[in-house]
Length: 444
Image (cartoon, rainbow, N blue to C red; front, side, top):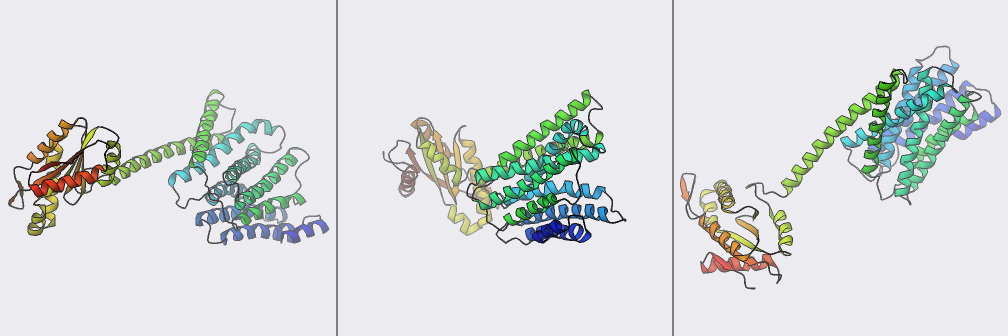
């Protein structure tokens, strides 16, 4: 269809309804369909977002062409809205398509909106005054005219970074070519508008649909193994925030330097940045909570086996003592009074153990009725802690109308660099259980 359109234009240079209203926009709409029906190996959000972006551009082009040929005009601003929305949707889709990520996050969406809204409108605002001397039209129309090439530069930057990170990715290369052709056509349009004047339905207009076609084509090729770094988008969002604040600062000093429509996006960018900050802080707190839960025993609230083993690796390189504890008589409680009572008993034992330990000592539940203690420091401290733990179980627990008594056998091993501490403590603990002494020390 694109080749046919180029051929018709070469034969019939004058604009026609068939060539410039129907055929040209049919090519643009076809690029959106190509993106929507891209292979299933793509990220669904990428194909959906890019397809929607291409469809928005096609709708804007269709309305603009309709108004050029028909006496009944569609609202002119709808073209500007469609073209403006094209950029954030394409930016989000490109980031998804050029990345190995599959889950979408709130921060990712906010970063894309802040970059698209903040950077583009701030740069357009700064360039508005000099552009007004070269381009005829209302300030808002001139603002939009320079906004589009700035959006193209942002898209080019993302595509170029992706190609650098994924040097062997055909998708990144094709995406960069497509965005480059589209951006070059936009720049040519801006140059013509500022000099001799833009002529509707020129041969160079096909550069837009050619760029869109190549962008859609990139979705039919698999991407590279690397992914776009979150730091890239977060840094760009920070730059957009600083630039927006600068625009508002200049406006405060020179109230009439920027038009109102240029200040509104800057205000929205700052508000979105504060929302992003609150979301980031909330996610950070949730991540800290998740990490803590991953290292905590659900029943007793003590450290779990994962946390204990990580600490054990540190103990192996320092002076200290490992105690391995196994309860005596706990199985009888579970068998006679039930597992619910057994769980309540473990909770109360954990409380007594915790109260018996000095500061800086790690107490962990390793599973079932087995506990571990890591003590840093000299050897006598380890002996005293073991005796305190046995003593805290010397009086019974009142549970389910019963007075329940349990004991504990403790295997003790000193960190001496002479072998597996956990295995040696386990052997010592079973020696203490068999001998009935309560505490046994592993041989050095």
